[in-house]
Image (cartoon, rainbow, N blue to C red; front, side, top):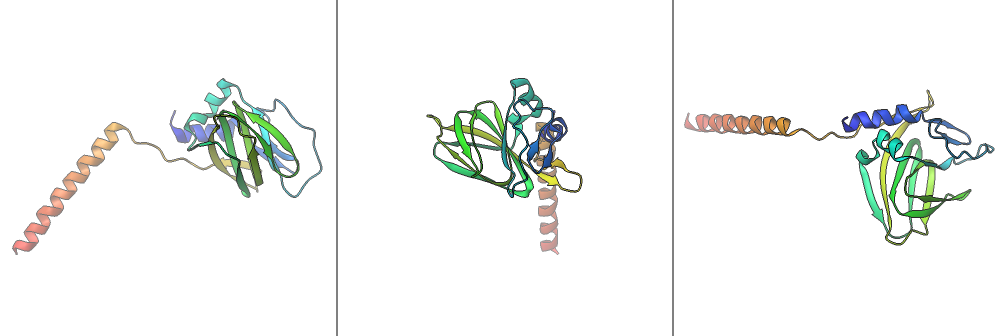
Length: 179
């Protein structure tokens, strides 16, 4: 499956919707906190994901990868949802309203706010990220399509086309100079 297909399947598999009490992931709802009154900032939500579900979501193909060893913050606006998969390590997340530990194998969804990551585990934390834009009219998330790699055959074809174009251009310039 190509990376854009992984991203599309992510949105479909998660069935992500937004509500006043946070981001809802009906298919991954393993540990759900009770509803709370609507707040100004929706903040973040942490969900545990099995290895099979992570593979189905294509998290290893998510475009962002980083390793952090010191405290940091991640931010997302109201039109964007940032999904962060914790590949290795652990940390404590805080957004002003709530605090939650996060560890390997969990997905953190950040929407309309900033989340501070602290108490980073020894050896750091490795994160894979993807951003989606949220369509407020439909309350659905649409995944920004990642750039695809080209195959070796496509690369060879582009190289050949470039060389032919260059040869034709050089011949044309020489012909024009000879006139």
